[in-house]
Every structure is written in C-alpha cells, then in structure tokens.
Length: 438
Image (tube, rainbow, N blue to C red; front, side):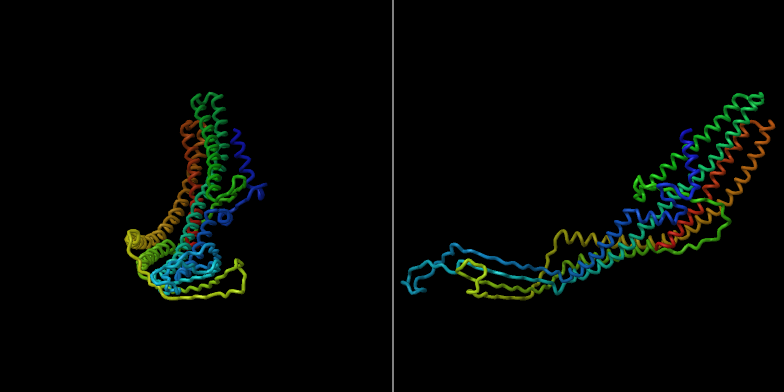
C-alpha cells in the first residue's frame, strides 16, 4: 500500500506545471533537445570530427613531408689527436716519420639541415584519404545521432505508455474495489459463495499488484533513460506528456533517407583510396635537401670572441629513395584489396536497405493507425459488455466468473488502446527523425 500511495501522489503531481527540483518535459521535442546536450557520446563524436579535420591539415603537410634539424655545439679538444707523417713532408730526414697534431683546441659549430619531398604520390593519396575521412566521420556522426534519438524515443514513449497505464490502473483499482464491495454485500446476503467472494478479493489484489509492478517498471525506465543520455542520478527529470485521443491522421510523408547509403559509398571510396595509398607507398620518392654549416676554430675558450672568423660551408642536392617490398607492405596491400570488395558489397546492400526502410516506416505507421482504430472500437465494446455484465451480476443473472472475465477483458482492452495511441506518436517521432537527419 505504501508503493501505491507513492504512485497516486506521483500522478497527482504530474498535472502541475512546476515540479520542484526537476526538469519538466511536455513533449518529445523538448526532451530530445535536452538529451542531445547531455549525451557524452555525442560530444565524443564532435571531438572525433575535430580530430579528422586536424588530420587533414597534417596530411597536407605530409605531401612534402619536411624533415630537418638545427643544432649547435661547442667542443673543447683538450688533447688533440696525433697524426703520423713522413718526416720529409716537413723538411725532415727521408725515411723517418714525425708526430704532428692538427687543429685548434676550441671549436664552435652551428648547422642546419632541411629535407622535403618533391615527388611523393603516397603523400598526395594520403591527403585525399584525409578528405574522405572528414566526410565519412560526418556521416557516421549523423548515424550515431539518429540511432541515439531513436533509442531515446523508444524509452521516452515507454515511460509515457507506463504512465498512461498507471492512470488507467488507478481507475481500474477503484472499479475492482467497487466490485469487491458489491460481492461482499451479496455474500452477507447469502447470494454468492465464499469462493466467489475470494475471487473478487483476488481480482482486487491482482489489480493493485499490477499497479505496483507498473510503478517499479516506470522507475527502471527512467533510470535506463538517464543512463542512455548520461544524465546524473541527482538530476531530476519528469515527463508529463498528455496522450489525447486524436482524430484520424493523414498519411505522413516519409522521405528517402540515403544517410546509410552515403556512408557506405564513402566507406567504399575510403577503401579504394586506402588501397591506392598502400600501393603508392611502395613507389620511389624524390627529395630535395639542403645543409648549411658554420664553424669557428679558436685557441680561447670563450664562446663570444670576434678575433676568429666563422667559416661557412653549404651543400644541396636531390635524393632518390626506392623502398623495397616487405612482408608488412604486401600484407597491407592484400588486405586493402579485400576491404574494397567488402565495401562495395556493403554499398549495394545499403542502397537496397534505404528503399526498403522507407516502405517499412510507411507500413508501420499505416499499421499503427489501423490498429488504433480497431482498439478504439474493441474497447468501446468491451466497456459496454462490462457495464451490462455488471448490471446482470448485481441482479444475480450472471455469476462471478462472467463478471471477472468482463472486467479483465475491459482492462486488457484499455491497455491495448493506450499502447495503440502511443504507437502512433512513436512512429511519428521515428519518421520525423528519419526525415531530418540525413
């Protein structure tokens, strides 16, 4: 009974416009805007897209692939190396050798080296690969957003369904209490047996138990929704969407969404470019290099000394680099070939699925409208049958078993009607997401 009291209080607060400490959502659009702002997964997708754009900048630089360095050194030759020379070279006796030391004790040196490629087909293809990756990442982020909103939609309307069923269960509980009171009076008057009274009591307890189970499931759905949207536990959210019985809807226009197909085609283009890049990486490259060196030799240890001049030396040229095939290179090329074949098959499959998905959404929406129309009529008949059976039960014309059957049929029919009403909104949200994110 404690849980039941909490549920009753909860649904009383749903009618209020403000709930202290909670964020109120009156329709799916409001919650969708909120959820896209809290989802850490979507924020990570934005980071990945930013990385893809920066990788493109790096790929442009990789075309010339500049390499180089600048360094400086100061050397103290505290003991110069000794060279052996023929004595006659320095005016000595022929056939003899002398020991000589060359150089100065202190040497200051600064040099720079730069190398960049002037012919690099692999670099150009890698740049193309980076461009494709930006578009591919963008479509994958859209697919991620679309899937996220579809999952949010399912949980959101599950909550709406449970809330509406709980409201209906509260009304059913009152009816079950009324039935029990009638049965108790008839039992006291000796018109029904103890077994019939027990059946009436069981029906009351079952209805109450069903209401409590819905409450527990509702709490679980809220927690699942928070997990999906990365909403902290201490953040209160409350969905108060009203489900009104609408008239017959017109046919919604479902537009062709080629997002998955475009993504598959980009994956195919990426696979082809990746294969070309793997092949081009085995081609020769031509680089231009230049080097500049400045040296100063001194007998004094001071770094700054204008008594000795700097001696420059420079050189430049071109370098041809021919890579040899390796096991890793050959494996990469073979794998890239298979990736191209797989990507092409996925592209063909995506084209077929895009067209079938459009028809599926149209069919599901039409089925939901048709089902709701039937459930309205079924509930109307079930309720009428229950009311007539109740009158017959009160007059003693029918027994408890007929009465319980009529009551349970009406309750189940009411739940089915609620589900059919919300199914319309679920399909409308799916179509809206399908049409907008493409």
